[in-house]
Image (tube, rainbow, N blue to C red; front, side):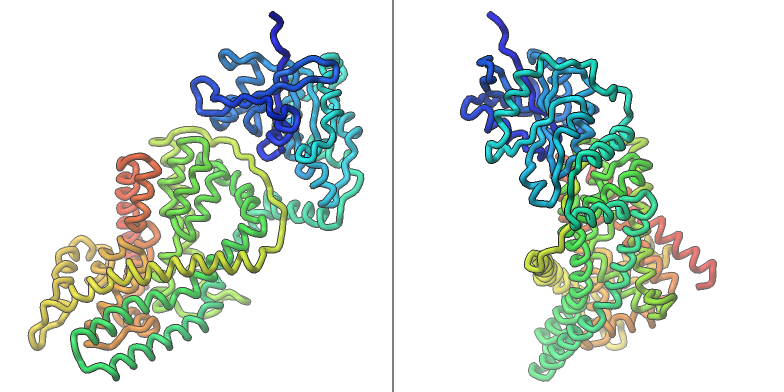
Length: 615
């Protein structure tokens, strides 16, 4: 019995292969798994114009034959005839996205270089035309040396012409093709760019603008400068734009405290509300404007299409530490919260890349650390200008975030040469179109994140603050004795103090580290509650807390506390998510141990250096 001729649909992800496969085969499809791997094998039968039946295989999307994932490995093995029990396809149908042609032609050249009968399906030409792009298929065919057929799979346009080209494919004269087998990846990218230039008949002004933007934002030197300038503006804005709103929220907290004090007689309940709830929880809620500003920048970067480009910019830098740009988006997401950042590592195919990214994600300064940073910076760093539009406080905040990034890269470098040893994997991803972020989507995103923060303030932070207040309030001090000395919390702090005294931490600072393991922001609430109890009922607003820190802490002590929070382990929820994503406690334990060690070492180095310099 003569074996059925086979043809394979290959191409980058999101090229429309599956839609084209469905249009060509109809209901005559079989779905199973490739033996030994959990990758779907989808095949179907079509009949060519000559009447010859063909088995059509829809292979997983791939960016290169240099496989970086199980899906890409299956594609590579099937195309090269190396997969056990799978015949090498006689004809290759390379599906490319007409609206994203330059990137898709890189892989198309790699397929054509195999010297097999090949047809290129120029798919989704309707979307390209909608975007103002007109392409000459004949010019593209001349450049590639294979037939190029325009198609719109979802509307079944161009299917007959594609079937005709597949029917004639075995008679192609391979010798007339351009020899591209020896080209390197950068040379293929350059060739793809030149092919697209020669094949474009016309394009809209908007598309030309996007092309010019990419030339700047993806430039090897201008791109990183633009990215770091944007991050710098973001941290300046966190201080400069939020102050009026913080003042308004703080005023509400003061009014609430005054109302409770006036309306209720002196009692346990009144002290709990003013010292525990308003002083503790309120001291964290006032930072909501700063957190919203931080999230607004991140959401705009995501929704405008810039985030994916930032990942490309960082790819070259991250390759030096053994990672790829694919790790950048989970790490940038960790600036908001390490939990979704760690969960986002699921998109990283290489298991060692993924594990390394999980282990360093807590070093990205999450929004929960922002209240700690801003209250201490506001207390010990003067609000002076160091240049046009550049405040010293924002500059210090930028430095803290930068220190976290540098620390993460250093740890990644060590891990990739020891526990997670391996070379950096390749990185290719689709670049979305530039667009103005829809205001409705932006507003919904900000509301969701604000609600998460407020919910934490009303649950975790509230509970931790009330428990701490109770520990600070009982047992009651004897006349002339400090309440902090007499309290259960004071005894806990005194027990821990010998370990932290060498790095400059005072007793109330040491005490704040314990509830901060529940949530980073609780460190601020802890300090506010402690000082409120010591002040015998005066609710500590954020401004008053800054005054207490400025009066009680030396600059070396404050800088050491900031250094601790750059490296200190994230909240317990983050550790739990790391356990779930790594399927065990081994790697979360490694993460907690190394983070505590770095926090202690760098807090100490900061304190000792500052003292030695006479700060």
